[in-house]
Length: 153
Image (cartoon, rainbow, N blue to C red; front, side, top):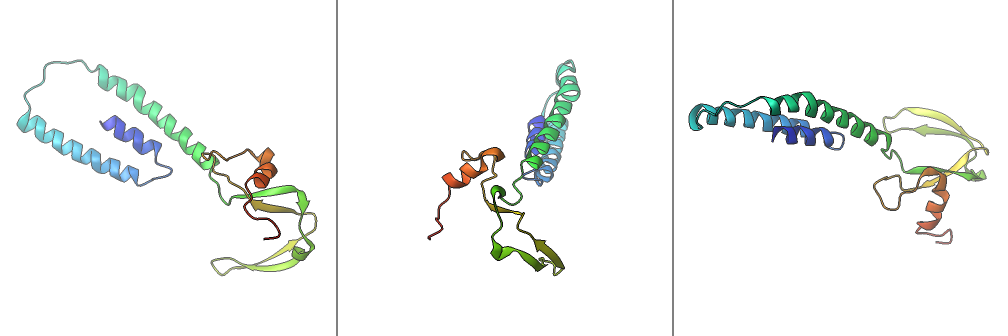
């Protein structure tokens, strides 16, 4: 049971970091209930080898940590930060060319310049688990196939 809890906490850590807290609480409950059962309820167990604990300690936990690192790296690499894809076939409209003052959410003010050589961006689905996800080389086809409004609308 404890190896399952540890593996699931590691597997889902990126999307649910609170899982480590729940795993720790579950480990504490397991510890105290097993301690009570060993000392008060259960009989003495027959002699057994330490093969399962050795296997778990020497193989399962290192492999689970390696899987945790790989899954975490995969989630961080594929995290869709803004769902904006560059359209390399078009350039910025003349309406947007010039110098602008931008204020971020914290109140800091920045100066930016947009030139005619810069490209347009459009909404694209960057959720790699979605059945409609396409790699970046076919982004324009994705936008054309799944656009829900025309310019006339």
